[in-house]
Image 1 (tube, rainbow, N blue to C red):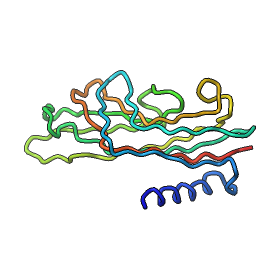
Image 2: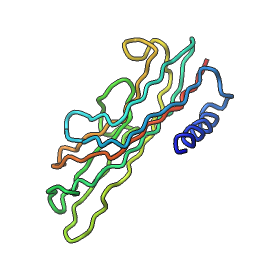
Image 3: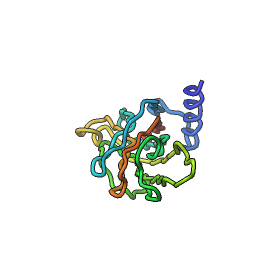
Image 4: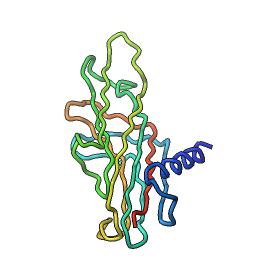
Length: 177
């Protein structure tokens, strides 16, 4: 039922996003998981979810990507220094699994282990990003395939790895021929 509701919501957004009737080459898709993915590196981004869109036709596509994850508090079952913030960054990219930490598509989530307090076990993080001008020649390897990634990375000051407990990425792409 959740998948059907998500698809209906994305089709509704398609109408708002494009301001035109649903065309043959418009696409809606997504991918989600409840498998934990651990964010453990301060240099290399960890891919939480990916989804692929293939441009068809002679024109170009504009895409809106929405992604989210539930991130476990790093203090759950770990030795986290009391009062030291553990910060993690999340972003959406197209065709690459690297990024800057402070882009318009990125979000940051910080956790602090408090002494004598029952801290939250997890927290959601969500972001969205639009990509315009996608064609059959500017995708991966100069082709029509475009892959959108939800990525996570630890801040250099974070001392503890933490898992994303679940994650989801969805897209709406409209043909602008």
